Image (tube, each protein chain N blue to C red):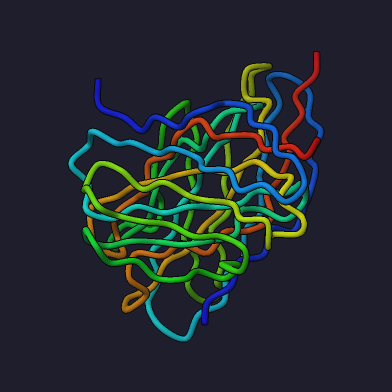
Length: 113
Length: 114
């Protein structure tokens, strides 16, 4: 079955440490997205990519970085510059076009030790 | 820029009762509208979408929504809810020229009890 795989499901970070969240899709989608979810705030867009080797900042990109070297993969790095990284992170993908629905992975919950 | 308002953060309802989850949007251009459902510790699943045409759209799990352009609303309804409908529901909007980006509401927690 096609879908989006996020790993790990739970991740713990020490102060001053960078961590990378994995997102892989086998839906042959061109566009991929990273969202941060906090209680009562809905989903906020961190970064998105419409094509390989190209990506754009979303609404809350500070303290995060991404790469898009392959169509299937869109890893997110939470850097030490992100002062409040504890959250639920969701990866999504879609065909290109504003009418296309996004498909979501099951998320990674990041916590600070 | 577009925005989405979900008027109720929580909606308690008894099993087999009808429910309506409210969503209003703001946009100066034509919109595409979506409802997603999220079960605990999971990602979002598409319930239904409005792209154009008939203003009443039907989705999965017996849900439907009505697009009202004059009131800029896209309320989600179900005539009879089940315990398994307990989840968080998100309304989202995209518009032309936004590179497929979605703007989400803050979500409505539907709590179904016996």
